[in-house]
Length: 37
Image (cartoon, rainbow, N blue to C red):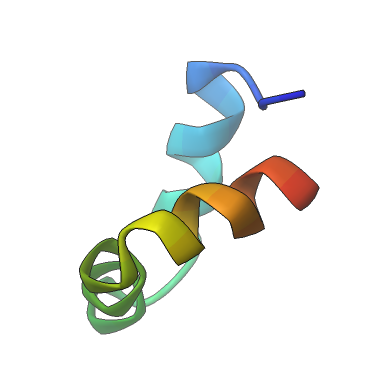
């Protein structure tokens, strides 16, 4: 089950840009982590 786009956007706005970039770099790991939140 994935969060809707609004919740995802709010989540990313609340964390440091560097951390977002790190998650994006992880790729598949990011998708898995987001799905588990």
